[in-house]
Length: 398
Image 1 (cartoon, rainbow, N blue to C red):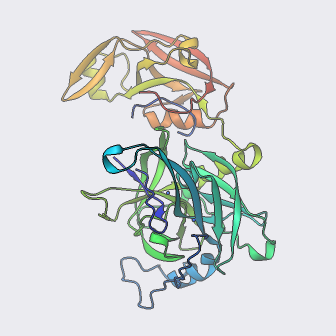
Image 2: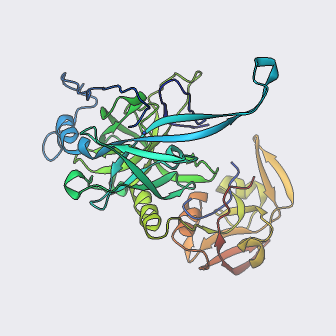
Image 3: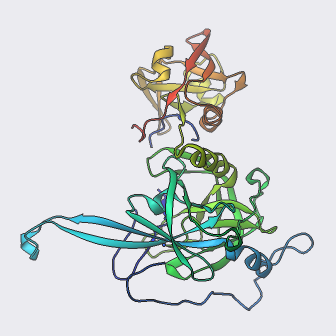
């Protein structure tokens, strides 16, 4: 179970954020009232330990990366109004409204004033403000947001000279062990830098609307409440991900050194659509599937040694309209349950699919209305089924 990097609570008002698989496309701010708190930028003068030091040569030092990119990292302040229900036992006979402020991070995308942050940073906000490295604060407009990838785009009216866009890298080139740094505003401490390495790749996390986000970058660079929406940066000072979630410990204050960033290649595609239309229309097939292995295929006497068992089909979905058949009999082997008797998908658009993530990737590359050609086995019979993809529902079904 992952936990979103909550927005840091503003002043004394608390603000915190806290699957079934339905295949679809793509698969936590500075006006804080009348009082002002000034926090100096935090820079560690001591050399980084060898385990997180960047290599020499083409790689930059942590200080160099910070100097280049910190001006492009912003603090995002959201204001929202929440309803407090009546509670006569505690002296609240009537419902009341309460204003909350919360802090998160973001970074400048271009000279047009577009800023990237997390969806969950701005979700439900009545107003959003952005603060820059020169302490200038200005109102921001929400251009668009996508809960399925936890990405949002803001825009500010600022002169191009005042904006420092961060260069974007290629997350497909990221390797386990690569040195990375995170710049953000943990607990409201503006433009704090932390360093670490890429701990793992190809992780999966759950989006705010319960869909899966694939190809996630795992890092041990320390991130905390308020880092949400800030950049994860490589040794060439390029953004390779957007910090989004952390692995929770036994208590909410635990920092286990495991955090997750949305890969920048996913972000690029989403941001382009958000800037163009204000929303992202994800293609959607509408099935729950379970991957099989040669061992499982042998136990169940399946006609193939790889593929995806279709366990359920959502009514009215593209899969239902195309005639895909779900499983009818539940069988448990070594503690894992399988729904047998349905179609087994082995190819999609001519590509072998042996994992759920592979099929999601193929669907993510399409738009609603596109056709997906599936090769399936129904019993021992091999069929080709063409599905016209629909639009992903707002929330994942169970």
